[in-house]
Amino acid sequence: MRFGMPWPGRDIGREAERAGVGAFCAGEFADHDAYLTVADIVANTEHALAGPAVAYAFARTPYAHATALRQLHGQAPGRLFLGLGSAAFRINRDWLGVPGERPVDRIAETVAAVRTWLHAENGEPVRYSGEFYELDADVRAPVLGRLDIPVLLAAFNTRMARTAGRVADGVIGHGLFTGSWWNDVVRPSVERGRTGTARPLEHGWIITAVDDGAPERAVADARRMIAFYLTVKTYDPFVAHHGWQEPVARLRTAFRAGDTEGMAKAVTDEMVSEIALCGTTADAKEALVRRGGSLPRDVGYFAPPSFMVSRRRRSAYARASLGLVGAVAAAD
Image (cartoon, rainbow, N blue to C red; front, side, top):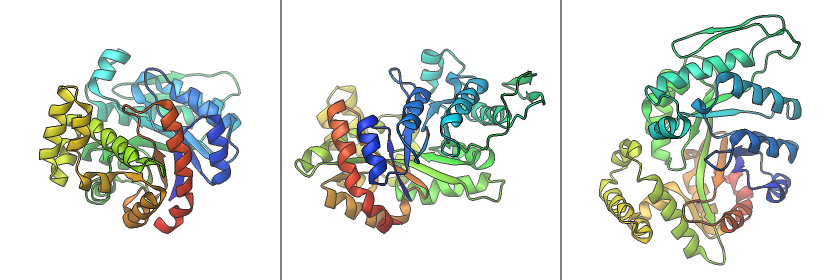
């Protein structure tokens, strides 16, 4: 597994690449754009992989996704990947102003349409016909040429994982993923959908909070992050798979009451052990070795908790996670 990080900014990012970090990713939200962040990554690194993990698939047209990647490719040839996520129904409808229905079918077609633009050759029309997109472009300028940039899908539940196996080059796992969820649910679903011969790529976020000076606080931050994620009912199959219905019911009750400490207390030690890397550096290294093949096979992004955690503390977690780089080989 290659050690990766969500982009921590230029100073820590440069330090991280020198320390052996081999990939950086960019998420997005109302205050940060995935492609602008990837531009910052490629401008301030030399060798590491870079890409959205993830970009909102329906916030942009396939043309806009592909054009951004073409421009970035000029600065970082061979270093890019594209991670797409369908986003929640309400984000699509209420934030982005686009249809939220049938996200799995829509994202499958988005992958095909983005690839149509990425694979376009000079002098040939760019054509795609589907239910959601119709392309018929005659680009009369020598600006195209095939780019084989891997496209990955954020796949949590079985149907999206099957779709990733069928239409994409791999998956991006959520920060909640456990070894059991990878091995018993996601990987078999990807295989059921798989049509090609190449092994699907696996990237994944890993909740990581390391603080040798205050390990209890790091564990508490990891608990709050786990609790916040599990307030989302989309993840109920994951909860049922692990038999965690009772603690999740408690943390959702606390969430509705605005009780963030109650949310964290509802997260069990088992949940922390199965999901996060947290505590001291030694604790996190031990967890890496113990979890072994239950982590994403290709790139694991050691992601600081963000729920109720300041930017300054997230930066401290990012720098502290560099102490885990040497443990990755032991976890392979």
